[in-house]
Length: 403
Image 1: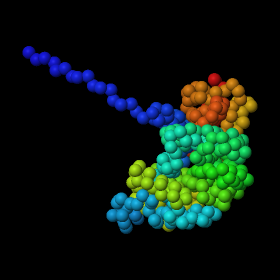
Image 2: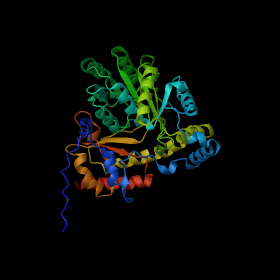
Image 3: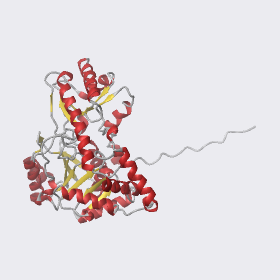
Image 4: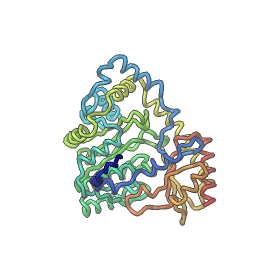
């Protein structure tokens, strides 16, 4: 006769870190998880059009690197980034008006990692961060995970109000202001040159870091380029400029960079050593090879021409798709368009019904650090063809009307 062996009760495991319990997942990622069906027209994701990737050019760059320098390409590398890539990035930055040396740059695993490194380098739990309202959602996640107190700066169609910013800096004593000044995510708006100069002046007078995130700036369809905030003399010693290849080359490469003053850049490098040692060597060398062999500016111009057609298709279809009294902007570039429906529409509550029409958007509420405007929504216009955009807007209209 056998007897069952008793298993002692297990003690409960220690809880997860407090900071993780207060941070939810990305609503954008959650929506993408339920819109993967091919019949869904997805205006929710910020996905570049895959058919426009320069697959041959990127493949050729990887082949050359792996054939000519396989030992180096597959080996560990320095944390700061491959010198060849940093040199070419520095030249591109300088050509756009901001004198830059290779040593001014740190290569990161996407510009999203740059944000995380900056949070590690600059923020202690309880520190205050100022953001635009609405704000890039993943930045809110980064700052929240760092234990920061996130405060929205009041603004208008031109971005954060400099006077309101100055008052908040005096009252809240924040560490930094985070902004996406060109073709912002989620709104698509661009800060005018005068507004940028005013923000730089506030940072200089009151002692404030500015984190200037620029993943979309090269995707301009009309109008003149507006200089970076980092180009203003008052801001040069206190501005961190972030860049990325995700929107102009390919997001799967996970290549970004930050340009920062020396002490902060070195601190970010130490934080990166603790995070991942370095960004994959083969990807960096392939990107450097691609920049040497290919006219990236010409490729971006071809992509922008297609994206402009898609933006125009969405603008043409919105009057029929959205309820009477809705308003929306006309972005000069980037990937996103921002719309506001009349009261009492709640785009979060409406989304399940709209999804039943096999079309998706992102509700605006999660992008707000302050009180959300629940009548807003973000539409990405670059992933679908003009014909698909037209059909998607017809479906969107049916979903909204049926609510």
